[in-house]
Amino acid sequence: MKTIDCRNMACPQPVVMVKRALEENPGEPLNVLLDDGAPRENVGRFAANRGLKVEETVVGGAFSLVISGTQQQAKEGVVSIGGKTVMLVAADRLGDGPEELGRLLMKNFIITLLDVTDVPDLMLFVNTGVLLTTEGSEVIEALEKLGNRGVEIFSCGVCLDFFHRKDKLAAGMVTNMFTIAESMLQARSVIRI
Image 1 (cartoon, rainbow, N blue to C red):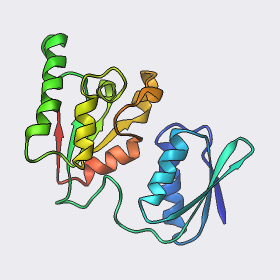
Image 2: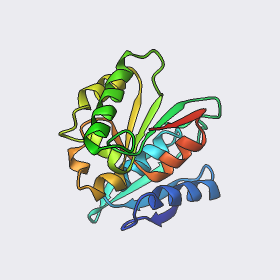
Image 3: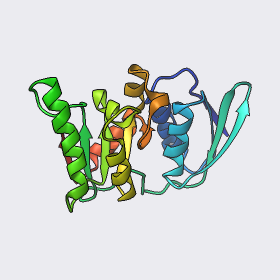
């Protein structure tokens, strides 16, 4: 069984390393050493969403994930062309006008999504957009309701770390740049707001 050490690596490097190792040795078990937190969660979710079995143990303060099985094509947050509509939320305000107006417009936009028929399949929050998914945001309740309607809500882990808000995430899940890029590239359409 091949072992790769992904400790002390920044997002999305652990996911990329695991993806490459799985492609190089299809069907063979892979042992991955990871730090706790986002790296462990992202790699575990990446493997599980491809239909792979993930066994986790603690080894000397680090985590060991043994990934085995045969990959499937279906992935969380990713579908083939003709699939999902992805909304990229790259700021905590809408438009280029005054900040106060922009924040009001963004709040109204997200709340209005609750009343439209066709909602996005996936909402990706990056840069200051992640502030909308954390404690203190006026749109948490709306995002939770969108989640209950099947909208997947993902916030960039690097962005949450940058703003020291990862422990304040209140809606959706933390993701990584690999999943963000893959989701956008394989979506039917990407709407940037």
